Image (cartoon, rainbow over all chains, first blue to last red; front, side, top):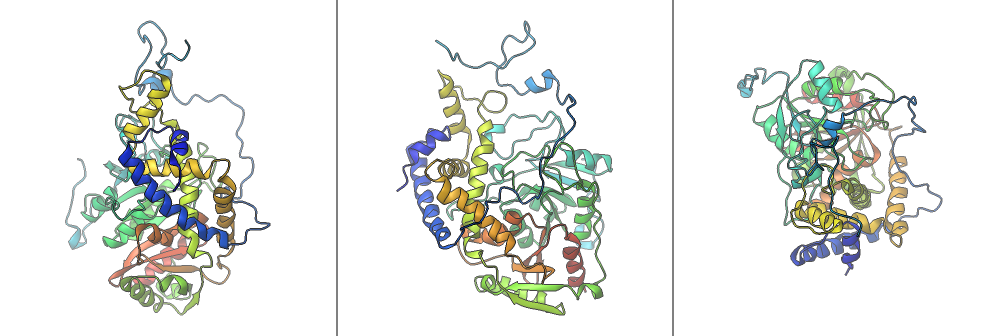
Length: 96
Length: 378
């Protein structure tokens, strides 16, 4: 059975036991089905990242304003002293 | 509501021009939740490009409709898919058309089951700017509609290159038209025998009856059909797990009240807010992208994706015809819709002869699908 706790941590999740059990069972089923891939010869085949045959899509190096500071902060769960400062996202302390 | 609902059974114009948007498409000043608690309070700061184009063309947007969380199709029989809100709205005559992002095939299948059509356009023809991303290499906004004329009318409004979406063909405008039914009978159909053998009886009958309408319908084979679901799921989970990394409770969306440290905030926000299928996709995505599993799963799936696209015989056939339903669990059923999604091809699902059919054409050949529908109207 897959040890999903490693991958759970990578996905930044902390699953309750009942959900971990449900996911374990489904993950096992899915991984069993993935065994079919081994039967297909992919020697000398390049991976396909995108179906589009496009290269280096660039735009002019010109500053374009998309959203205002107010619009960006409008959905913030918590802001830091918005009356005093221009506006910052507030997060828990990260340094001791 | 400023749209007048008429009785669709009489054939009268039903809410002409009214469109509903799946709630993964942003409309300025309105909630856009993508069906997830993590975005339960997210108010869009801008319109998606498709919304701007609908408004500029005088189309009335009625509102938002529900979807599976992030559009993720369910793979387990104990958790069947919810019915798409857009399918319900169009089926009930509330709206004439609905826009959805249907990478999983859920909406295509449900549309046919409810007597509706779904147009899944060529990948790269409709802007994804303002669409909540799920699988970036497969996301494509399509149209659920009662008839394809209305659906292609809306598609011609929203399709076309957009400087805000770098993964698009350069064509600024697409116009869709159907040839006459008489000319349409010359379309060459490929009917994959290896898929038809797995179809349910209604689907098999629908495909055979449909093929009889055309002068040339030959048996063919979809060579890698047996691994479509697996390739779709591996690549899908990898990209979904990457795209949902942005939901951390910091800049927008749901934030847990239960935290002391930054790591607690991340873990508890995401654990409390994501649904079970999203968590499964996140865990599987992390697994297939991990160092030891990347080569046998993710890289292998990307290689098979190329083989799938290169194995298609659009030099011999104009349209590949599949049933819209198959025997087996939801995970296996997803294979019917995976081809168009994986290869970025246009497809249409529609009800036919008591069942449903799913038609796939080559890149930017939506007109072949439109013409095939004209033939069925005879």
